[in-house]
Image (cartoon, rainbow, N blue to C red; front, side, top):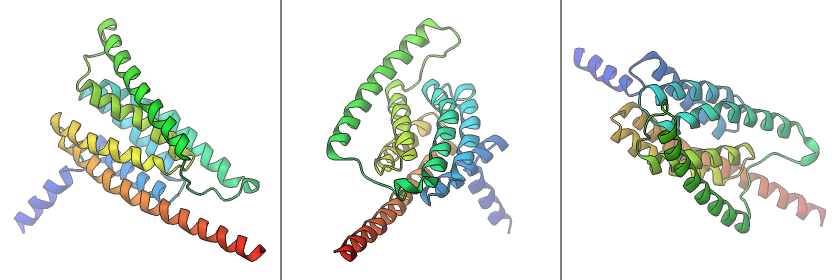
Length: 224
């Protein structure tokens, strides 16, 4: 009985060793599940997660880019929340369902992301040298990749573009590695969960896309 209790406590530690970490983890997991199911209530949970994570990233782990990212998530998640409300109620624009970008748009997206990663990394490096209260960034380029791709993925998610899940999967794989190196296994474990949830989200949105495509084909066939 005692061994089972200790094992349970050890597993619970993966969700956080402090109340803030536990709240952030549970908010993030529930939020991603809701977004994967296209439930608008996922966004306020994301705002809560971002607020706590920003504090931890800057004060505990000195991950400057991640800290800035989490702070930026707060207005971004609010923006996504508003977009889903407006787009979901805009009946005249048709159903608000997941879609892929065109190949040309995808190529532009990759090029833009690469340029932004380069610019972000260089900017953070310069700021750390010029501004005393900004600590020297750790894992500068890996951190820059996860930061920039997270911004891109978030805005793609607001527009229900399927590419957002590709971006999140890359971010989550790198996140597992980064936080493991930073000896923050709790957040490393969180990113492993997010990776699984990202795959789940892709499958859910892909299914919704297929259903809508089949519906449109049936409507087209019926009008002939």
